[in-house]
Length: 397
Image (cartoon, rainbow, N blue to C red):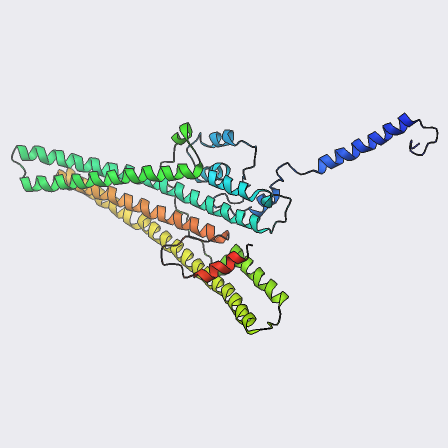
């Protein structure tokens, strides 16, 4: 029988029953209480598929009080892949963490998913992942290129030493020795610049990953990933870019709110304002479509160039080198001819690496575009004006 209704229940029994109910209700309330930081399940869901380089994998988002050092160190044990680099940056980049901390509960599950702070965080996540992927590509390509140029420099060094000895015994003119020495000097300078570029590219990657101390000693793969068998065909790249662009959605929402509040402008000033608002949205849409066309054209061109190196230039270089070796073995060519061809082959290989790098950088830009974030095109390539950016920015407030 319910103790509250039992007239024979003692006061102590009734107090015990009340306490039991209170504890049960408190337990239910605690179970339903969100995490102390508000939780980021909504932001994680919002960012699904928007991290460049992670595909459909779960997106890691740092949270206050959660130390990701162990996870970062585990990812650093093997040669660092592009995906691991992006995952580390999203967990460990100090600037990203400071941005999330500044937004605070505005990005948590306590606010709606279309809150401007959450949408901005999603876009910042896309940008950081794209920057990290591109930094990884640049670092790997720079190290790979430096290794190739080191071979070219060693070949030039062998030719220079040989010409020096032959000049000493009178079998080679001083003019030819000077030419060989010049080639060696140029190869040495190229190698020095390549090594400096590789060092700087690695440091840029380290900064984005937020690493220091022993963590900076991670290994990189020896080569860039191979080219895909075919380039992506995206006839709808413009519509996809427009559909995903956050600034455009915010500008459209702001314009629609203004139209709903004032369907018929009551004054001349209101008429001009309405035209300006509509023009701002249209301008942003035009620039987004142009950006989509440029990004996709860059991607296709970079793929065609890199594929041409792989299928035409490098095979021809190998054939020439093989024939040169045969003629050298038949005493039809000199050792200098052989060394010169070996150096030319190394330089072609370096150019192929650069073309492969440019493709993967263009591919990262394409992923960024399709994830809804703007792409940093070369200076002068974007036609958007300050008014379009202002229209988008106004919608974020």
